[in-house]
Amino acid sequence: MPQTIGWDDTEEIGIRLAEKYPETDPLTVRFTDLHKFVIELEGFTGDPKASNEGKLEAIQMAWHEEHQDENE
Picture: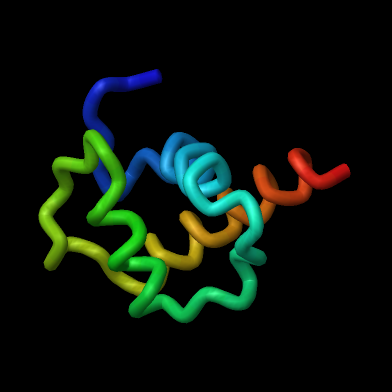
């Protein structure tokens, strides 16, 4: 597990979000809340202003995949 992560570490962010919010369905999370969840992750060092819809969507899909794997 990398010590620090940024916006382009979508798979790692997805894993960490699935671990931190195991009961949350990622597809129900608004991008404003997802942004907050990501920047609050331990080890996140990315610029909060550097996110965009494409990055948040990629993170949401990575989280969704991890969430599905854990709930099978």
